[in-house]
Image 1 (cartoon, helix red, strand yellow):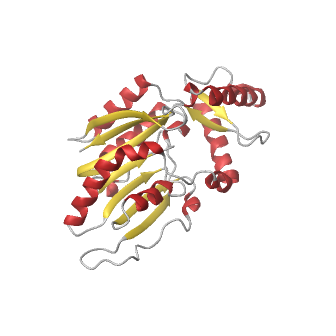
Image 2 (cartoon, rainbow, N blue to C red):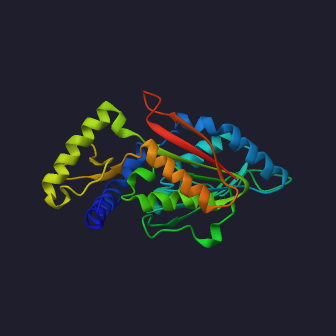
Length: 269
């Protein structure tokens, strides 16, 4: 995708979330089945944090309504969790996090506290220096497919790696919507509609680039990119090169009726 098309695609996606973010958020509340595959590493880093008398530190890129953190509260109800969330629409997280007010006699109070700040992910984004090496867990779920270029997706993966403290774990998901017949058909229809409305996009989309609509609303589009295995290899290579001691610890598929709607990569430091 060239720069002109990328700007338009990003503008359409930003407009979608500004207008429909709240209704979209209400349909995204439960945990993902794939997250259960992360329970082992999560419990391990939580135990280490508790042994050190501190909260579990989590970075969530594209945090949305803090859906992952609410799932994490259910998994680790006695843990103190401090989250830094970055999102284009930080208002989606309003009211989703408590203040860690549970009882805790020998350390930080149990519960979730979160600081959510605005961020524009893309080619020019980089992890703020103050966040480097500061987290036990760093995640990017439901984010990579909205980024219009490889450089932006690479920046997110590099950010996850750089955020990890020694012993930390990171995970990212890649939405394989084009491998799902129903979603692929929707994407073909919405992409054709988008190209009809903006003829300048014709011939400018790259492999895996598409648009999706929202609940049948006319003229509503969000950009989506399907990261294939070859691109994921490149993203992981960039991430591990960006932070000393970081390696890929695993890769798996999960979610959706097929059990393969998301492709996950797990990094460890």
